[in-house]
Length: 346
Image (cartoon, rainbow, N blue to C red):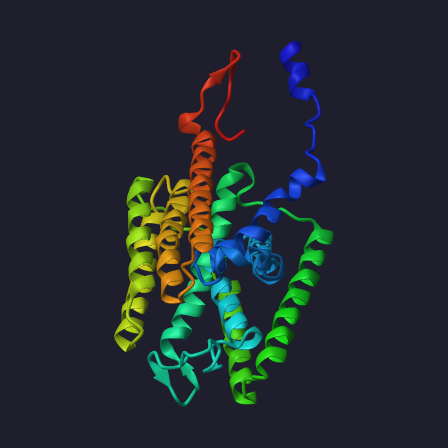
C-alpha cells in the first residue's frame, strides 16, 4: 500500500524560475563564451555582456527552442548557428563587409574576395566560429547541466515570444549603435546576397534532422576521444593562418570533423557525454586562445589578465559540473539509495 500511495502521489511541478533557469543560463553564457572567453572583449569591459546578451543569448535560445520543438537535432542547431553567424556579421555589426571594422587593421586582407567585398578568412571565422562557440558549445554545456531536460523545450509560448522581442531589440540596438559610430552600411547587393544565403541556410536546417538515424551495429567510442578530437580540431581551426591556405585548412577540419562525428554518433551509446566532450574541447581552445588574442590586441593589462584567468576557471568549473550532472544521469552509474532502486529511464 505504501508503495502504491507513493506511486500515485502527484509530482510537484518546479517553480517557473527553476523551469526557465537553463534558458537564463544560456542567455548569458553565449556572449561570455563568444566574446569574453575568446578575449575579443577584455574582462575590464564585462558590463558589456548586458548589451550583448539579448542578441547572442536570445539567438542561442531561439535556435535551441525551435530545434527542440520541431523534433530536430544537432545538425539543425549547427546550421542555424551558421545562419546566426552570417546574420550578425553580414547584417547587424556588418564586420563581414566593413574593411575598417577594427581601427588600424584591414579587415579584408585575409584571403580577400574583391568581387564580394569580403575576406574569405573572416567569412569562415565568423560563420563557423559563431556556429561552434557562440551557439553550439553553450547549448551543449547548458543541456548537459540539466540532462533530464536536455531535449525538451525550456520556455512556454509567452517566454518564447519575449525572447523574440528581446533578440530583435538587442539586434537593432547593436546595429544602430555601430552605424552611429562608424557610419558604415553594406551595399544593397551585399545585403540582398546575405539575406539570400540566410534563407538557404534556414531552409537546409529545417530540411534535415527529423529522420531517425539508421541502426549501426557498433558501439560509440568513449567520450574522451571525442573530447581530444574536439580540442585538437578547434585548436587548429583557431590558430590557422589568415590566408587561402588557412581557409582550405579550416574547411578541411570542418568536413573531417563532420564525417567523424556522424560516424561516431550513429554508434550505440552516443549521448550527452560525447556532446559535452566536444563542446569542452572547443571551450578549452578559447581558454588559451583568449590570452593570445588579448596579447595581439595589446589589451593584456593586469586587470584583463586576471579577469581572463577568472573566466577560464569559471569555464573549467562549468565543464566539471556539467560532467558530473551527465554522469549522475547515466543509468550505468546510478546507485541504490535509501533502499530504493532508481530505474533507468525514470
